[in-house]
Amino acid sequence: MSAETCVTVRLINGGQSCIAAKRFIAVEKIYDSFEKLFIEKMKSKKMGDPFDESNDIGPQASITLRDELHQQVEKSIELGAKLLVGGKIPETKGAYYPPTVLSNVKKGMPAFDEELFGPVAAIITAKDEAEAIEIANDSHYGLGAAVFTTDLKKGEMLAAQHMQAGSCFVNAPVRSDPRLPFGGIKESGYGRELSYFGIQEFVNIKTVYIKD
Image 1 (cartoon, rainbow, N blue to C red):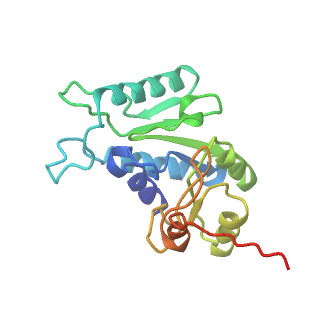
Image 2 (cartoon, rainbow, N blue to C red; image 1 turned 180 degrees about the vertical axis):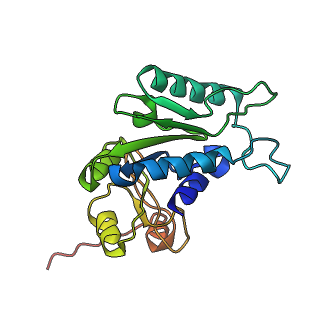
């Protein structure tokens, strides 16, 4: 279930969403099974005309952005990432890019350090929970993070106390909701929109000081 959810959230709007998941970190004991399921789900997604409801993923916003995404993929491979799925510009009209999966992704690669604004997933292995958290937080960005676990109490603790992101979800993809404050930290911005906190962004707070 977690692999299927991760693929779905990676491909939101063709991967062109600020809250579309970018990096997927799995601990060693479940890495192989997660990678296998993730690849199967990505391979099953059909790319094509978005007006055809049988397709799962449409084109990128422009040829230029598609080509920049491909350069990030190629550079990551040059630096040691392994291409598992996709990664080739199709010989078809339009700014299409296939669902792509990279493994063996390390710090210093575009797939680790940069935002891949398209249908490209970076799968990263961690030896244990502590390293997984360290890797997740090793980013210039901090808009959203998600924890998938069978231990809900631990998941809540990790999301609340350890994950460095403006929104942290447990066993669910990050999304905006008018009832919840939404916004990021680090280079993902400051301030919040939505909910009571978002309304306050539009309020001029007046200070009156009186000395007796």
